[in-house]
Image (cartoon, rainbow, N blue to C red; front, side, top):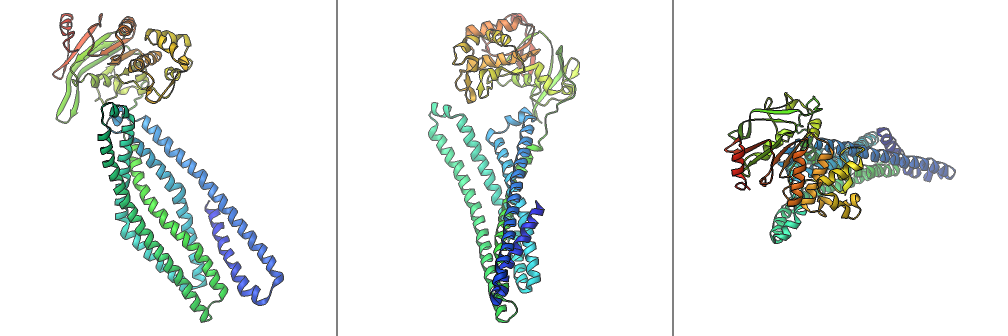
Length: 535
């Protein structure tokens, strides 16, 4: 590509000689026979330059695609390897805005960085040519360069400040819109549209204000740049004309210098614009890098082929450096056990259960599976054997069958059997298209209870050894719930129930209660006393 740019510059310089030759030689000497021949040569040079530019731009387009593919793929693969808590502590719009930052980087690299290199090459080549043609013209160019470089250097800090403000305010506005679009039904149902409108105006006005300040800086920079460009061009013409009067150069040389200057000015303009865009992209690069450099989950090395038993010894979970959510917990759990955990809201039940699938960071030597520290296990295999489901299951856009196909070559008879056990098969048969029923974004065309049944069926189709149900069936109708729980209790799976609605759960192996930061076992008679009290 640099080679093609070199050819473009050379052909441009050679092309500028055409008018000089016509004015200084062909016309004065009446070289009519040479005119057509010379014109054809310069026409060929012009065609060559246009072709070289076309090929160069084609290479830039292909490079853009490769850069975008690399940036987007790297970003998405990184997202898949980030800890669950990363997403819990950030707004969806904020994370997605970092993806937009990646596209901004692509734009800067593909269209501006490469273009800036080419334009810099053009400036150096044409300036060098003018250096040998006319020293006075070269000095004017040099002074103009120095003035512009000085201006950019002085204003760089302000430009960076305004760019940063603009990017952050855009990110906040984008995050707000993503959040509100996802909760529009709640806003309308609770009559919060006017309050939401006020919040939007506050957020968006800040975005407009920061965008305005950024635009003012760029407008000022463009004003000074255009002012210098006009002074530069007029000065060159004035100096060249004076030199004609003094017989230092010919009229053809003036035309040639004017032609080269006409190529020089757009390149200088593009170079300055590219510089401003690249500086802004450096902020986007920093935000993008915040994601790329974020510590990934510790995936471990050992593969969990079969879950046999789990033991917990003196396990404590820190809320912060000064307080614990729970502490000194001991527990044993083997495959096939049916365990119930109860307790007040916020007592630590969900956090405790999420530790079994390492949704939370766990210190070494806290939880053991099959006698091996849980942190040693490969996360993918761990989460295949132990599946955690909460009360808000996620179903993606697509057919119902696509949501259920968690592994390849699932036998349809098994799918139907599992769906029957989860009391969702009769509902599926009534849906338009049955298993080919299309689920909307956020599964808005299904009830919460239906989504919970489908999520349970999907989990069972993965054939785990342990199932953790954290209020995972809280919206299922009572009759279906009894049938489902009876099936789960009789199964060979290890089941951990976390629920406030446990009055009907019988034949459990163990019942625990979170109380005063401790996990305490309940005897049968104590369990009966608590039925209905914590519900």
